[in-house]
Length: 202
Image (cartoon, helix red, strand yellow):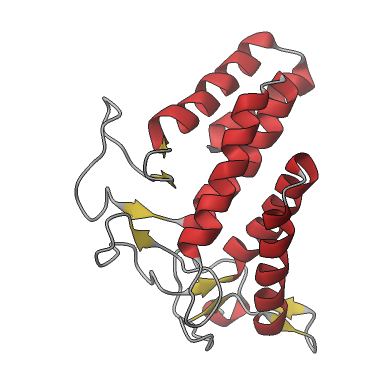
């Protein structure tokens, strides 16, 4: 995912067809090895032969990663003029806002198990700031291209959750992480970056 976009930006900046080709190789791998339309999911991990891994880690789905990946794919395949891939990316955005949305409390969960079991991912039911911001951009992009009303409908839902839970107006910043019920917590989910509440002075 990251290599596909970085190589694409670099390749076009340098007008280097070899780097652009490498970008497209990575992007097509995302769309063929990790994207599974029969399940409407984008996996984090697959075997080297591209088969699925039937373990808790292998079944981990991170909606925010999937949605972020797909706006990358849209930008890449727009440059390549590949309309079928663009539509696949748009469809995948929709799959993951629907899959990741918490109907009980609102917001996008951090991770889910593809088979409906207990998620392997740490803090799986947390509501983190970044999947919501990725989704806001991806949903507007999907709507701009497709004109399909679900994009705006989901944008409104994600926007309403995000702006009613994350902003801290007195500091001009956003709360970085919430539990499933929308309450703040301070334990680092991945790396103690951006959020001063998780950093300690030396």
